[in-house]
Amino acid sequence: MTLDISIRIGGQAGQGVQAVSYALGKVFTRHGFYVLIHQDVESRIRGGHNYAQIRIQDQPVRSIRDRPDVLIALDRQTIDQDLPDLAEGGVLVFDGQATGHRSGDPNHIDLPLEKIAGEVGGGKIMANTVATGAALAAIGAEIEPLLDYLEEQFREKGRETVEGNQASASAGHRHVLEHPGPHGPKKVALGTPQGGKLLLSGSEAMAAGSICAGLRFYAGYPMSPSTAIMEYVAARARAYNILVEPAEDEIAALNMAIGASFAGARAMTATSGGGFCLMVEALGLAGMTETPLVVAIGQRPGPATGLPTRTEQGDLAFVVHASHGDFPRAVLAPGDAEQAFYAMARAFNLADRYQTPVVVLADQYLLDSYFTVDGLDPGAVPIDRGKIVQPDEAGSGGVFRRYAFDPSGVSPRILPGQSKAVLYACSDEHTEEGHITESAEVRAAMMHKRMAKLEGMRREAAPPEDTHPGDGEIILLGWGSSRGAMREAVDLLRDEGLPARMLHYCDVYPLERKGPAERFGEHTRIIGLEGNYSGQFADLFQRETGLSVTDRILKYDGRPFSAEEIAGRVRNLV
Image 1 (tube, rainbow, N blue to C red):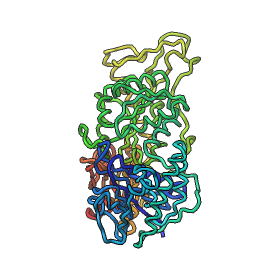
Image 2: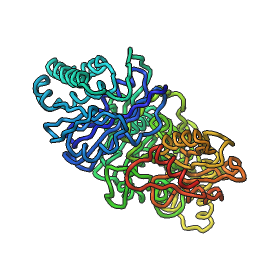
Image 3: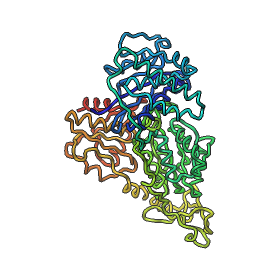
Image 4: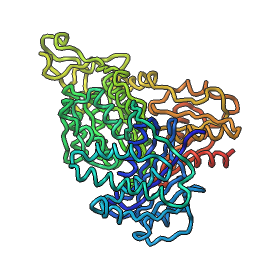
């Protein structure tokens, strides 16, 4: 039987909810299992109701589950709000003294978290470590792998801290095992560490992909959920010779990135929808000067501040049309950590090859979730700097035709100061040499040249992931972080006899135009699935391909899709 266990840890901000889920994720990943950790947090530093849910399988985990098998309640609000979600036969672990909760259910285990932490750990701050040990016991897993992890995690803080955490975890584990009631619906044997797997958040994967792609300059202004990308890059800036500039605002951040890229460095910034609103004038500058640029965006619900710690796929239409006037850009939207790593590498290559902005759209769910990945290959996407002219080929002087007309739309590029050639560039319309012009003829020719890049990027766009090519009349059409939930939902529906398949796009703009029609049969029913109110990708897909999206499954409450939810809503439609 396939292993499939979900553990939810709920509590207030500041109680260590995320620390418990991450410790469990590391332990299970090290022992050869696959995990997905989803963070559900309120927009506050302390208090509120937060939870982290970890799903553990012996095969790749696609999505979260609606009903956990184990619920660890660090406060009373978790019991009140999350206990109804507990699966039948599931285990509740709670601190009766701290929460005031009483229960006669043998699967409801009263564990004095704060008392144990104070007695064996040296302070109630270790209550979350007690809970971590209890979570392992609730599914029948041994404690030793967690003790090894705690040794590594707290070694630099001294033996007292290590031993206090280990004693706290052991006490929580022992208390659950000694409880007279059942210990949960499933048992897990961790065995010996296997290695070879990584536990990465979407933010870490995007940052690592950028570093492997040759990132040399990062400018940014912190805005959740994108801040973790900047933090990851900054922590490794010295090791990889990257200049990280904390900008005073998002306007400065993008302009700094444009300047660095114009000078020849691979440059990027990351922000969220509200920050990108401030960047769009500078985005147009990159479009007009044909400067390579990579922007990562962590989507969250809007408008305005919206739900700042929740998730949504609401910025696609904005990003595709951002800034005034027409100019080409590419938009990528990876579906998980592994795809995010390679998408960033491809983004830098596209930006250089087509000398244009490339936006990588993520969202809070993707950036803040942790995924088990079977290793990553930095060499899988070679670095391609495009048409950069070497100094000895740029000529001995005179004005360089930086914007020379070319059928591909891509002109030769020199780096300023690297040769004797003179380089002109400006934000006004310009001639091939970069001089300002108001000539109608030159304007029309330059517009045609720049927009020709779209066709090249369209030809180069990766085809969608089709789970069952030619075998399924019900097509779930989606993009970005809904990938895993869609894929699992298709499996659920096919097990029930419904002819479903998934078509997931990572390259969302520009879209291929002829290919999609060849994938559909005469009776195909396309159901657009995305996390926004209007169905932005469905609209884009219809406009670009001419194919009709029959129905739409939309979600805009700030929470991600689960496979069960998708499958249920498809059943209701068909």
